[in-house]
Image 1 (cartoon, rainbow, N blue to C red):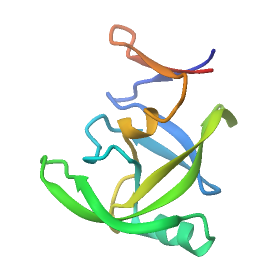
Image 2 (cartoon, one colour):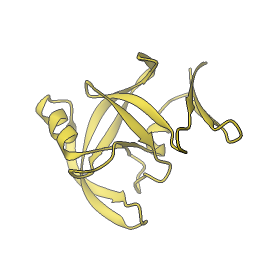
Image 3 (cartoon, helix red, strand yellow):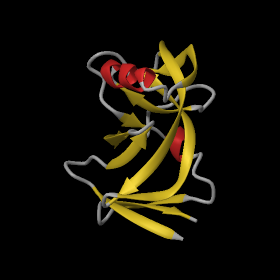
Image 4 (tube, rainbow, N blue to C red):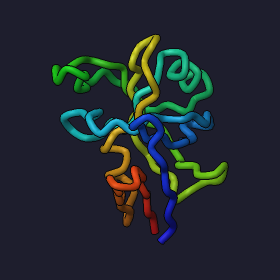
Length: 137
């Protein structure tokens, strides 16, 4: 198993992900989900348009996402290839997931549905040390 360990900064955990050829830092949001658990990422509209323009997004549709207040919202969603990065290098296998266009001022979020797609992987959370380790085979 390969392991990367993330250290909480001001109570937040962040991870780098290459999404359709665009490498970005994402905030891990355990509350970001959708009813079918297909949407793993949320990006701002400018990033979503950039991914569309380069042909990285496929199977685009409108779908439900859960908002921060627990209500359901509608977002434009597309299928995309992703890759975790750790210390500037690819980490684990590529993952096909769905990304939501969260709007013009949306924060880049990665939710639990993304991590569910890491076959043979697991997350170990050490509350005392305020670290989160991602293990993949």
